[in-house]
Length: 256
Picture 1 (cartoon, one colour):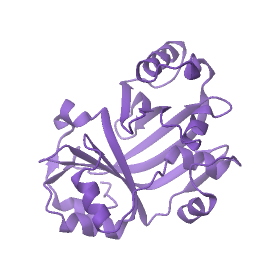
Picture 2 (cartoon, helix red, strand yellow):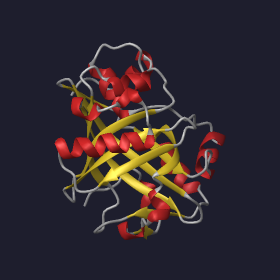
Picture 3 (cartoon, rainbow, N blue to C red):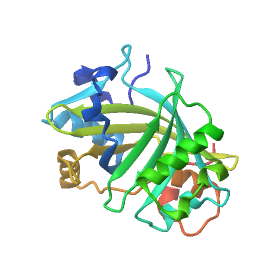
C-alpha cells in the first residue's frame, strides 16, 4: 500500500470517490497554491480544528497522476501565462495511474481570477474528434479570436508525474490537494521538485478560504508556481518566464 507523504492524513476520517458530488467538483472556483515543507504541512493538519476528511480508495490515501500537456509549437499557452494574461487556457490529458483512467481537461483562468475547467471523461488521446471538443470548450469559456482553431496545432509539450492526496473540509466548501514527489519532463529532460516540499492547492468558491487564511496567518505565502510552467522553464531557454530563474533553481534538483 502506498503511504501519503503527509503522515498526518492517517488521523482524518475517509471519504469515498462517490462522495465527490457536484458540490465538491468545483469546476468554477478560486485556486490558491502554496509550496510548503512536508513537516510544516503535517504540523498544520495536526493542529487544525477544521473537519477534514481524506479521499480513500481501496485502503489507499495517495494516488499517482500523470499529466500530459499540449501547446502550440511556439508555446502560445505557456507564453500567455508568462506574459501574465489574466485570461488563458491549458489543455491536458490527466491519467489516474492506479485506475488506468484518462480524461481530457481544458482549464481556463478567467479575468476575475476564477478557474473554470471543462472535463471530458475517458479520453486517452487527442485526434480530430477531440480537437473539436477542445475548440468548443475554449470558445465556451474564452470566446476570442486568439485561440481560434488552436486545437489543430497542438503538440505534446510536457509531462508531469506526482503523488496526490485529496482532502475536503466537511463543514465548508474547500477541497485541498497535496502533491509530492513531483517530476517535470519536457524537451527530453526531467527534473524533480525538492522531495521535502509539498505543493498544496486550496480550491474554493471563496477567493480567500478558511485554510488559505490560516496558512497565511502562519506566515506561508501563496505562490503562482505552475507545474507546466516549471517543466517548460527547466528545459527551455525562454523569456519571459513564469518563475524567476533563481527561485526555480532553488525548488528543483539536478536533472534526473
